[in-house]
Figure 1 (cartoon, rainbow, N blue to C red):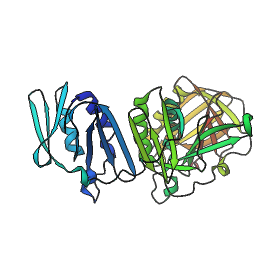
Figure 2 (figure 1 turned 180 degrees about the vertical axis):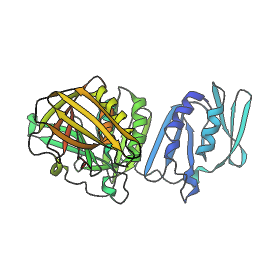
Figure 3 (figure 1 turned 30 degrees about the vertical axis):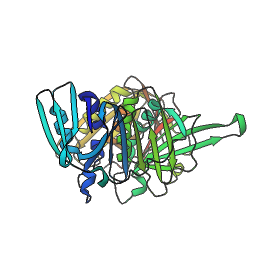
Figure 4 (figure 1 turned 180 degrees about the horizontal axis):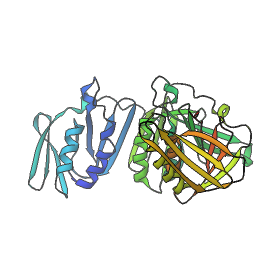
Length: 376
């Protein structure tokens, strides 16, 4: 292998593969990246056997070939190289020679024959959808995923297809749902070219890696496939496979409010700022804050014996009865952070102990459900 590649292209490929590498693996070869050069491309692959990424970038290939090198060492070396072209040449005894201007390195590699097959990459992508659409849907749900490993079926976002009608009049949409048992995030978007049958629970780590790929794709279209226990996404730059969580996602419809609640509408930015200030005076894990709703007025307050107390008021649109509710401030802030600051947030309240539904005002396709906290 003997190639010349720009540092920018090489760094881009490494940014999409390095974080997949499992540094605590019992298989040392999985700490390496697989590098293959052929036909004007450098291909870099990484896998932890649950998530696999295969990235292809332009390079001037003088001699084809392949090897594997430690992901961290390669990343550290490339990061410190001067800008411009980088030469990668495979020398004797599986040494990868890396040079840029006057800088030269020889990194010990391992034969590509030792690298395992790449699980899931053989799955074909059968559907297409806009990259920016999927990125937005993931960003609006991933925050609600559970991190409790004993509830493994909640450790990812559930992808669902929903169809209505038959024939030419039928419509279909993609739904993404996440919950940790205390809150829920739901978003749906009409997607014409999408085809998979059963729900798929995609793990959090895989979605975090997928977000990086989608951000680089911009306004382009991506391919999506779900088969054989994997979800696969293919872009112009990379193909990413993620092993699905083998479990049944709970029936989230059971926690959705059955009756129309009382609506309070408030500007997102002032609410976010008030919640952040209130959270400063709370030490407990729950970050409980008190919300007092009065006619066209919201009071946000918090207190703790160790730190003190805070209180502030803001004008809102609310004409219901006086109501006091406690919430985990972080849950409200996570939802608010997924909303543009200039938008209004609609809170549909179901009493002191009932779940609250949070929406972007005027948008029925995206909402969060937050369970209240009992106030001391």
